[in-house]
Length: 414
Image 1 (cartoon, rainbow, N blue to C red):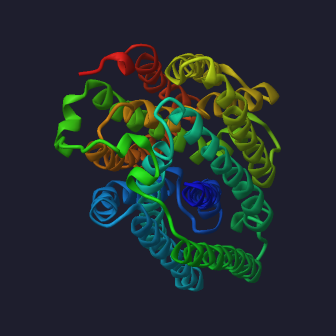
Image 2 (cartoon, rainbow, N blue to C red):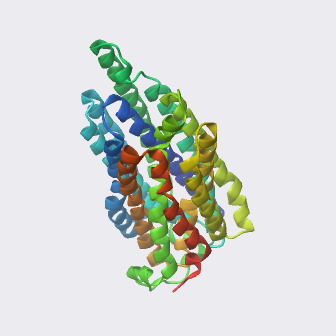
Image 3 (cartoon, rainbow, N blue to C red):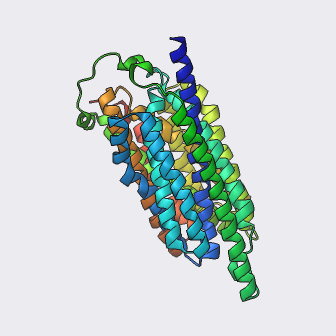
């Protein structure tokens, strides 16, 4: 039993490192959005296709990844994801050498397939790595490290990518070529470095024993005869699936056009400064999880979700009217109150599901991340024609549904 406890602790540490890994990637992707606008001559609407490639990968890979985890083990599913993650990072090399936006889309698609595989295995695994009562607490604690990774991403991107002069600010063709070369070189350096770290973690997973089944939780001790497809008979799961789709649509969009919003509402604000404010927003995101997670020992996670999402409805309306420094404060606050949404929806939607339904349910919840592929394109179009204020206002109805789910939809069982 002592040895099993040790293995569970090792599993928690290793799986938590995965949350950090995809947090770094997510933090960088929103900076890359603005970076490509600056150096590859694309519009906000076109830059939204980066999110389409990235988060669309989740939709495509989730079920195959869930099948691998179900047929073999969570460990094999995680190793599969790490391999794809490393390959995607290394595909950045030819994309930067040719400075080709479409090659970048392909590289980020493969990279995100790897991350989607990791999320398909890691999220339900962390939920089941103990009792159901503390599932929301456990996954939010792990997601705090995801917030740390998201915070570091914009700092790296702001310093290495957005600090380089925009092409339209260059005086000559030679300066344009030099700026592009320096920018692409830095992008390549960062992603090759990430690939090296991913490979090291992959080796750590391969060499360590990861507990599964009854070795993880007493929930597995009874034989489960339920059919995976039965998950759709559980209304709290179905409502949660839509809540996750709409929430991710908002989270990704809020990050994708964060720097654009600040540029429109704050004169003389440089993109590099915008990236640092974005890192502050992600600190708020991380702090939101750190400060809110202990509350879940006393207040139900779904209740906190309801209040936080309702506050975000109000903040989206405020962003429509705000300008100057107050607009920065409100936008950062939006991230604080988004912080606990993804892991809480995941934990609540999969609560009381039999083991046979958890892996399918987890895969479907990861597939719902495709909301982050669709909304940025729509919001980018709104931004191009009506400005980013209108784009953020369009997020309010989506937050309103998530608030309803927290207060009411999550309590409707079967």
